[in-house]
Length: 187
Image 1 (cartoon, rainbow, N blue to C red):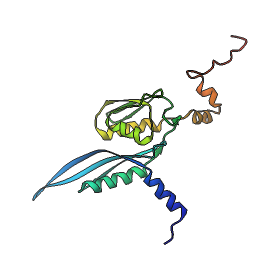
Image 2: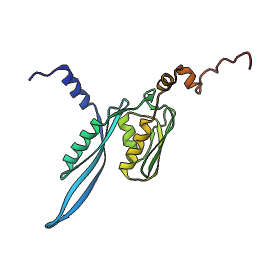
Image 3: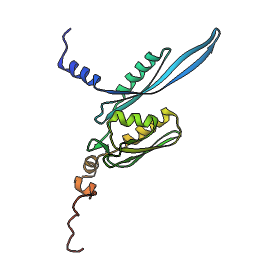
């Protein structure tokens, strides 16, 4: 069977993805002969350029659980708008259940200041400068889902401008280091 250019592009794209294992949980089911162990894995997958997804997988063996989680994460990838390809456009809060996450944009050179599962999300996403804090639940599932809740609510100034029917310059205003806006005759 001949491969099409689309197959090659999809295969190359798959190999360029960053995969981060967030956690593996061993669960036991008590049966007549003793205990049966199973494993649950949670993975974060991203391309390092603004696309990221997470997935969970369960199986009797660890590698199989990881494979299922990775597959689910690839299917559930979302695009997140990034400023200059290195940080978020604006501060954002996310919540899921008892998990709350506060994510703030940061100046160049700050690095990824985030703990545990949220750090894996930002590394897979390709964010270089961000400050994040997890409040409430420390359960990796809830923390990741809260982070994704916040990230899916992120909007770029261009998206906000088109939605409101305005120019990007009207939305963004003046940032640090830019020349002051021209004043009108009325003051």
